[in-house]
Amino acid sequence: MKKISIEELKKIQINILDYVDQFCRENKINYWLSYGSLLGAVRHKGYIPWDDDIDIGMLRDDYERFIAIFNKKNNKYRVCDYSIDHDWPLPYGKILDTTTLMYEPDKKSGITTAVFVDLFIYDDAPNNKQKLKRAFKKRTIYRKLHLWQTYKEAYNQERKKYNFIRYPIHLFLQLFPKKYFLKRILKIEVMFRNNASNKVASISDQGNYVFDKNVLEELTELEFEGKKFYAPQNYDLVLRTFYGDYMKLPPKEKRVSHHRFEAYYKE
Image 1 (cartoon, helix red, strand yellow):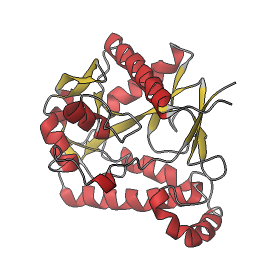
Image 2 (cartoon, helix red, strand yellow; image 1 turned 120 degrees about the horizontal axis):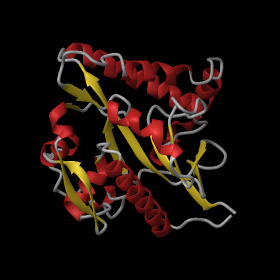
Image 3 (cartoon, helix red, strand yellow; image 1 turned 120 degrees about the vertical axis):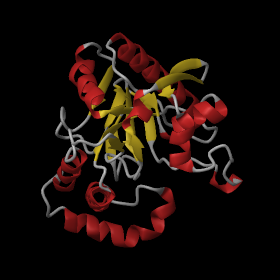
Image 4 (cartoon, helix red, strand yellow; image 1 turned 90 degrees about the horizontal axis):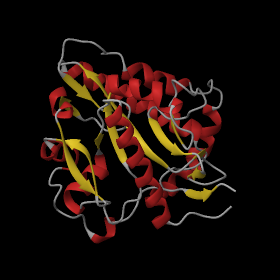
């Protein structure tokens, strides 16, 4: 198989995003650039120079409409999450280019997917801060156990020093049913659904970010790699919540990708 270069990878991701954008517009589904992709759009009008992925977000209702119909209307791109594929290993979805393969972090010790765009869900959250704090804490514990059950070695290159304890823990966690911890994360995600609050939170990811729902419902368009995509209208508030002083560049030694993967074109 031919390996995919970083430049080719980004072109494939932009094509996925472009297709998702058209699909969502046609079907009146709201999405927005999120995390590093939102930061990249605001600060660089595209990728953060040292980044190599694309993130988008959706509210739960839009997300469920999206995954219910997306795979029925195309062949090349496919959305995957646990609700439609019980072999899926993550508590959030990805939109995959099925003409490619991706190993995270490598062929030996991780999972096999394809070149993707990450799709994060924002779920209803309670006004009660203590309830949400307990939910975040449980989610974080289950997420760590799920990752240690799934991956044989440290997912992050920087954590290789922990490998000598991770593999024995990985073996011990095989005693639990497959997806045991993932299922508990998924239950936490929807435990506050249809509550009386107007808050939403990123429970599916590792961040403890909370917003008023209208912040993520009111959208604008921002340039990303020469094209226009949806973003929160109050992107300044969103980015300050994520990153603080987001226009300030990090030190040079931190301007590196934190992702590990091998990507290939299918033969």
